[in-house]
Image 1 (tube, rainbow, N blue to C red):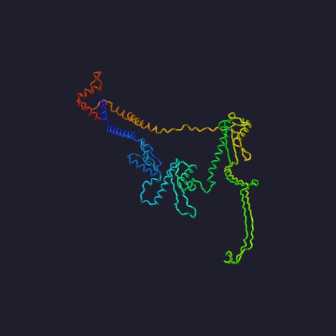
Image 2 (image 1 turned 90 degrees about the horizontal axis):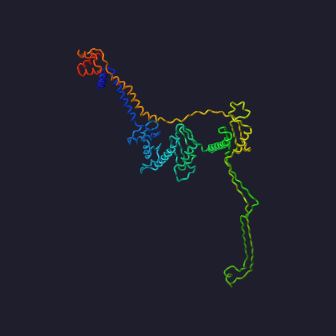
Image 3 (image 1 turned 45 degrees about the vertical axis):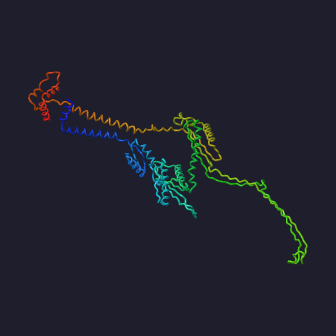
Length: 520
């Protein structure tokens, strides 16, 4: 109790400005502790979805509001929720078809009325098809978002006098930052769209990126369409030969002591030849036809007066005349012969190797270079016989032919050591761990600073015993004499004597304190 009384007395004895400063410090400390507690109890937000379109962001925000879930909507279509609800919300929203992506899909037919016209049905079908294709293309890792436009000719029963209208499509893709579509991915998008739309050919599809670059190759120029495949074939062939050379020479000259480059020239012209060969000695009977015809001709000699009487037996005018007969016979024979014929159709390969050029550099020096090369003792001496041996091995490896004009160059040169760049270890992402530690370490550190810097010095200052000095006292002469008496007992300290005196004379003690306050 004495310590508490001293703290209260010392606080009352402080000047007004010190009292105000102390109150300000206490209020600021309490407010800081409150903010610290709020920060500790604040929920940890993580990304639920990012790079959403405005439509999807609005639908998801509306769904979260309906479930009374707190969320944070940030620019570029990013929605953040509490970390313990991220995965559950993704599964629940996915079951409801969110996010849907840009445009509308076949869900447009979920709400249709009986009064919908045929024109609206066809328009909705095209919109749904465009939306579904757009969502599929946007699911590629390099594509941020996309739009698909289709032109579908109307089907009719009438024949077209001219060229039949063909379906066409245009695909617009927005690529991620620093991303690029290669030729295989572009061909994949083209064939995806062509396979999804009836009567749509790959040659009628155009792909354009957000920078205005035409990603599809013109279909009119067949040579341009094949150039990409031809270059891939050439590079693959050259790489294959290079690997063969390295794999057969590195065990001999040493790992990393050989560099090889192969240049191949191809003829991609495709030709077709048809040959017909007749064999005059190979004559065979193809068909044989025989016919025989026999004809008998003549008259019976009957005559008389024309009329009825001559035709009645025994009548007037009837009689016999002279008779004559003739006979002929005709035979025909036709034999068809077939000559042996051979028809040969030859389609020459569209890829013909015209020429090979190989350049090889081997690490080392010649014997004559020992005095001219710096640090020659670090290099292997290669003789001319060794170089000839290496060249023969390469000739047999690549299938060298003089008729094509193939060339091989094997050179011995000292390699300079290139200092490897010290990349160092890959830095791990430790920021989440640091934030988790700081979340609990900062409040403890602030509490310790508050205790040792503010609270502890304040308690010491308030706990000090006020010094007794010769001041003017508004007290009785007996009180003054009591205080001025020397200490008679060694066991009682001055503090205890003052306490005992104050307990016995409370009015005099109060007057003494008032006198001190008046002096201040």
